[in-house]
Figure 1 (tube, one colour):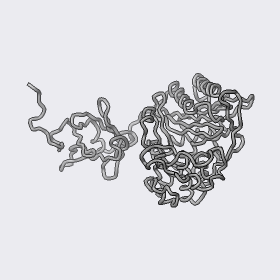
Figure 2 (figure 1 turned 180 degrees about the horizontal axis):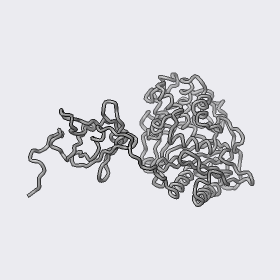
Figure 3 (figure 1 turned 180 degrees about the vertical axis):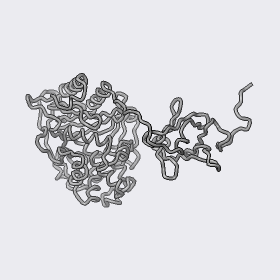
Figure 4 (figure 1 turned 30 degrees about the vertical axis):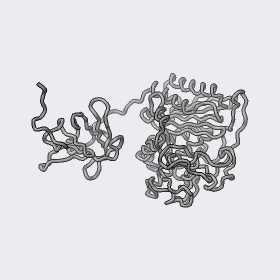
Length: 462
């Protein structure tokens, strides 16, 4: 199908995207499949394939998005954190007493590292009415904890029911109302709803050994809604992907979203090998040499994926109305790859800084930690970056603090202080980074190198 968005990509790229979703729909035997691609904060392509003659959906048709709902719930929790209503290290009991799992922290619930069971007790919750589980006790059951908290990643749907209840307790309103008021309306996600609104796709199961289909039930999930209830469209999820990339101060800052995209759960050996990690309501996967962050989702009758290639500034959304069939993440990752490789991101023009503090300029340049050479650079965003000049080594960006120090943002130096140390006459002596001394020359005898510098200096062997 053709959409106005397609004119913003080259014809060859558009055909490659259409070919990929056509193969996915055909080989995956999906009744319908719709997809969208985002670049530069806006939808640049949308397409769909269908088994129904003359009835192709478009990017405004609703599909159920399953666990992508968790990312919406996580945004609400991070908003509460940013307002000071809670801390991610708080035990659940502090804000939502009486659950029986109150020692688990908010962060552990967000990252699926609280040790909770993956599913609810009783009948399959995704295919039965939420009225069968009217309260939190009904979704937690008699054995809610299977592992020690904080020790391992163990995906938990009931954990997100607890987070939804936490939002309701602190906001004094239903999860649905809070979500609509604080996220959906500000971001203009008018076709993202708790219950289906026409036009929407039907839910189908496709027989594994025959080309026949069976309708799936569409249940209201009740208190499990924050884990997977939402319906949305490719167009709305494309806008949500743009928000998750750049932030929106009306909803959540870019800094908090970077935190959401940072791994937060212990990783198992198999996950290390596959390049998978869970963050705060989002997951990271590696495909085609790219780091992709987002979430997948499924409920009986539906498959979904939203994935973001932050480095390439390309995101993709894939929605299908079948219980199993096409692999939505694989398709979405391919859509990102097609655009990123066919039409690489054009960097913004380089521009000099409007102004620079002389005291900061004095810090930049070459430094040595022992005999290892590093460069300290002042970036256009006001941060400084420390990186090795040869081979692999520890590197980090640092943000300025009010007292003249700099705080590490990632890797080994995350949270560590970089302190410029000056002599009594005000001249710059060295840098102190978490007790490591960086000097202008290797083992500079003019700086207080721990252990001292041999007075005979550098020498040969003869």
